[in-house]
Length: 154
Image 1 (spheres, rainbow, N blue to C red):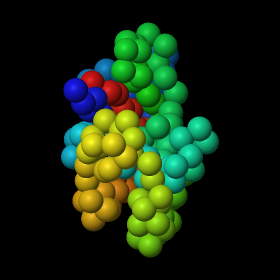
Image 2 (tube, helix red, strand yellow):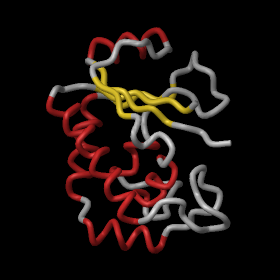
Image 3 (cartoon, rainbow, N blue to C red):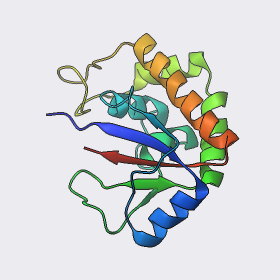
């Protein structure tokens, strides 16, 4: 079984409404599904192995506030406010390829949802680099428009 993750961009008004009501509605301005099956591996590399206190760029996939009225079976829906989206976007843009490759080599993939057997990643470093670029573009677009990001596991 694999747990997939879907990211959505949303306006500040939709973000505020979701926070107020405690649920994520269908309204959104953009969606990123390309990382849906590799999010856990990508998150682990971005975190550089520190899942307890991940760096800002990793919070693109593990940050945000949990909505209290949501189903928490898989971790619930998370909301990242526009100001934080801008900070995450900047951190993603500052993460160099050599640093990403260094983190990849040091990452323990044991138990990752999309990993291969044992501690082996299911994706190559180049595949995850490509997904990091998509993630960075997604956050950059949201930051340009002053948008929030919401995501959920399913």
